[in-house]
Length: 407
Length: 204
Image (cartoon, rainbow over all chains, first blue to last red; front, side, top):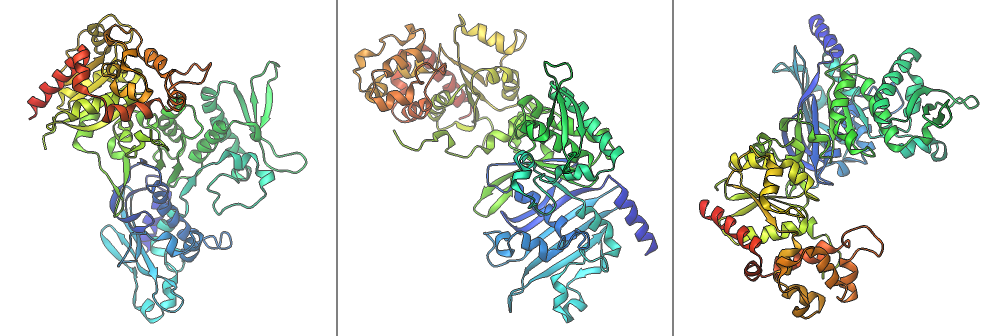
């Protein structure tokens, strides 16, 4: 036991951990998605409404299940994670017919171990139709951990136990606690600049885990001053290249209310420049600051939603490199990043390989992965970028004849 | 299914693609694998060397572009591929002399019907038209208001065409435009058809 714990701790502190595979069953758009390979950088592409964000949501769901319940009231746990998604009916794939179990299985790997965590759940089918676990299993290096192979004898004797996962329960997850920590630290960012700019008028109702960056300034405020200054310094250096008028970025709480604010100095006809607060920053600048901060904050998987939004095409082209450089200069150069995108320039970097792109297409049987075809591989071999090869194929049929009235 | 009978089609705009579809669909042996609307010639030109490599790798490519104001086709080939490069026989860089509208004017009946104008108002020798798009838009000025508003840009705009320009002309090319008739009056279209026929024979 002692040895396992020691390896476990290594796992937590080892930034080389990657989610290498994920399988989904009846999860939102995906009726059956088997063994999707994930890399250190994975790019999720697909037409609108195909399920790109829902794919990321499967990983956010694991985070919500594993998030420590004690940290904030109602922060974690299976039932809370499902409630937050408006119940099982909203979450289950519409194509699910006879087999209604929803299941997520992820394989994690670091230099020493391979772990597989699988979680299945469904309606109990009687009484209040409670949501109960149909399977929870942890495999380490090919062997199932006997302490987490559910439903077990105790579960069968007391079905109430099946309403919570072992993952969320510190009394039950000791042998695979590193997994719980890893999942709980997954970060998702889809910063909506307007929420940040108009935070005062919009009021303080914030979503759990702040996916849209409303509390971004608060997060900056809560960071230790030396770390905060170091990060802002690095962001300033990166922005210097991208927004030429940009001169200085600082953090400053409001002198009266104490509310946290970002302040930046822009070049101006006055020699001293012009100071502006975040509410006056451009959407693109704010999104870039949010992106750069998130890259520097945390060591677990980072999920980014369409990072190209509001950004100039030339900057979008350099995003893969920017992500690489920011991580490389930090503590966790191999941190895993999965992002969704519609942008061909973002995928025009020749260092983006076909294998790192997950292309979703819609079928009558839910969304599936469409791997690159032989012809697409030939195109790539002929000198085209992965974005040029794969993205045009996603154009919805009939868009060519976009017209609301016939001639 | 043979790889070679599936063609990558690229053009400067959706009108060009509409012509490309007609050219390829004439042959049962050929199929379009993928279409690409370059939104002007810049991206097509930048990718020309890659298209040539694609053809070398067994994926035939048909690019439809305009000669614009270059004196001859060879100059365009040299400019796109560089003088040292040899163009693969399956890389069909077909050039609508001047512009794609030229091929449309070569069979004026569908346009005349759309514009409600007599065919006699259309140029007799489309080859001699220097700027076929402007010519077409000039004719559209006399068309019924609904067509005119859709095809022409707003007064004073620097836009070349109206927002529904392609939506109106592409279906015309797809269904009413007579490729046989047009190729009799347009040497560049005739040449393009021969080249695509050769490709079809190769992959029959």
